[in-house]
Every structure is written in C-alpha cells, then in structure tokens.
Image (cartoon, rainbow, N blue to C red):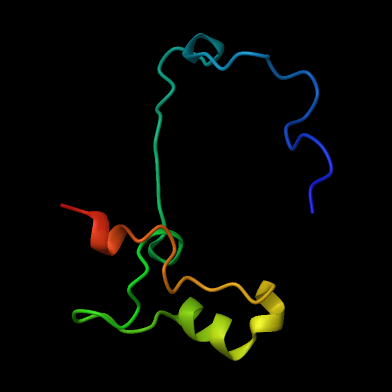
Length: 76
C-alpha cells in the first residue's frame, strides 16, 4: 500500500498542458474489467479477469469487478 505520493520529485505542482511539447498528442483509455460490471447480464459473460478473480481471490485481495463503477447500467 502506498505510504506517500506516487509521483516523483521534481514534477510541477500544477498540471498544465503548457508543460508538454507542442504537438504532444493526448489519449485516454479504459478497460472493461475496471468500469463495466454486470458480468452475467445481457449477452455478456465473464472475461478472463472475472474468472481469475473468482478462481484466485487471494491474489486480488478478495476484490472483483462484479459491479465496478457500473458503467453497464449507467450509460445512456
């Protein structure tokens, strides 16, 4: 478990796009396991991570993504 800041020393105190070079391309990403939830609803089935967390719960501190942030039910 983290016991202090995760960021390294020497980083700017304020996050600004000005700290990045001109032409820097920004991107984003998500992972279904982290956001969707609703493992057995609709036409969905368990992903390999759903299966892993059920088979080896001690490896994941007994966490799973059965609900996650529940994007599956919240998306409109």
